[in-house]
Length: 490
Image (cartoon, rainbow, N blue to C red):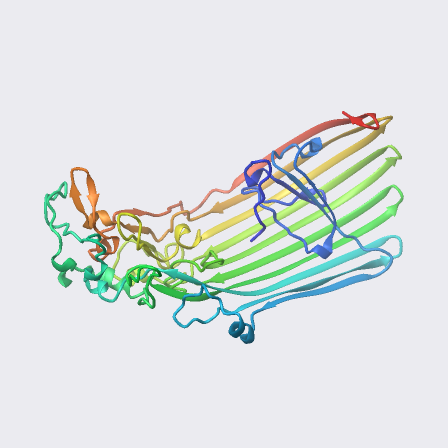
């Protein structure tokens, strides 16, 4: 939400540099752009993919530099609004043929982006101001096709899951207790009700029932649930810049930028249950981001061939991301111990990866996790950076000599949940499969789930007080651009 990732020259996105008004415009940890000013606020854009000046030598990808507008003696302003809306008339006229939801309703899309800018003088020829704002109110809806357990399977009956002799459920309580060799199949591919896990049955209630069949096969046990949902995405951005011309040799400027983002999106099965994200939304959870940037500069023309530029920069990047349902304890309510351990960090629906057959067909998922709905949550990120830059340029005949320093001090804290802190449980088909000397075949992950046997578990655990990283960096450079002839510069 702070910006898009740009890759140049085959380098990682973090190797691309961004500068706004002569100061860094990217967070120190991931290297993503921090402030994206509205188009009406941009005075100049420069992009270089190779042969940058020495002052940009800290990047190995591309270098993008932006400058914001300043005011003038004349007042100028602008206003804009972009509205993207699928009205009921549009829904009737151009129905989405790929939306396979049972009710065939077209999801609502309401995207309104608006704002403006104004600039002018406070003191003629001396003090100027410029300000801009951009707001976005977006409701972006999409559909998704996923897999849910059938009504019969919730009671242990997998007879309808048999496909050309596959998906046979074997009783893990039979055969060799160590190797699993010699297992026998459950009669009629049905698990007795007295063997079903009460915790698994409680979690199954968060899955809706099927409402469609798999296209092309007619199977009702995979790709059998189509639904729609909406993501809410709002932004508030504004910038203000002030320029002061003391005299012909000294000019000053200051700029402050604010960019706030909020997003909330449910999973396919609702806010608490989560599940797969919707197509083109790609995220489920709740996120609140605030980016701030401050820049100040003093340019002194010492003489016609000697110029000094001084810049001070400060940036702050704050992210809070949590799963929907934070504060709830659905695992505890279902009778599963050791997952929801508190009301915040380990709260909400854990991630359940309920696999299908040995080939990965019929997989189902519930809850929140990076591999379910891109929710790295809860996530707390706090970054601050102070920066002092000084550049001095000297024209000496056909030489343009430039030297300078870039000094930075950063305070960074990033506490992710690369694996959901409430736990990520995987239920594979091997626990209910046929074991032989060459491996495991048959079985079904949902059957393993109903028997209450997780085949893999992980969770992210950090200390109660996560350390704050402190970074100090000094960069110095010197450069001589020698114009040998009108056609050759070294």
